[in-house]
Length: 287
Image 1 (cartoon, rainbow, N blue to C red):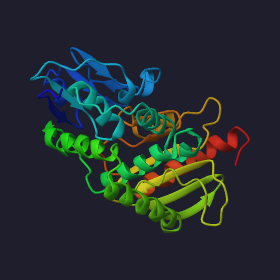
Image 2 (cartoon, rainbow, N blue to C red):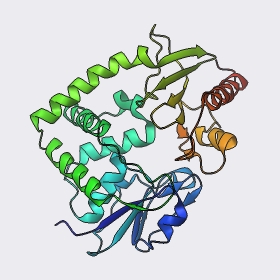
Image 3 (cartoon, one colour):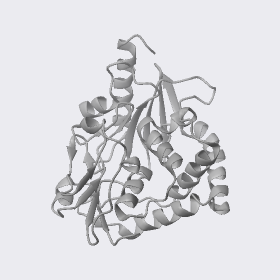
């Protein structure tokens, strides 16, 4: 049964902590995490051994509780839905969501998921593309309960195989095939540089079909930079690289990491990140 839970998002961990949330879901800011008094669902950086929030075993929170988050994505939504007591029962889909969150969308073909769950994932991605939720630029906490509940409503429809949402997902998948050429900027030393207002860190082949080992992408909509590796070399961490460039508020996983939330990046930052990625690949004998 759904419980009345309020969800707040903030780009500043201090703003979130001041709310004294009963639970937090991916309230992670590089090496920093905001703890919930009842539950803390976090699995990035030093907490990488924890289960993804969307598959974590949690009990619903008491009515009136506050959940704090740093961003909204499918994994976060799954964790919040569980804390609200309204997570749709779909183990295969949530396993797929956790797999993609940790390993990256480019590993989708390796997930072992059913065609049905992959189609559902594309359906959610298609809907999410036009329903992004972001924190206030000034760092203050923002109530996003309505937006999160809307996302859960849509997931319930997708997991009941809503025809319109699934059709939109298929169209989204086909459009993605054209995104490769449109976002491509350069390929050197095993690193593709891309630029787009969409997520492109899953496109590890050039328009000519050459395989890359890493992608550095500038998201022009949010002025953010994301570094990802198809297979991070032994001892190499995308998170370590971006934190070396932009400080501890940058972060992510070994295989994919990004610039600090809310901080505008430029083409020079892209260049610096690409140089760092190529150096790592070259030093271990790749690229």
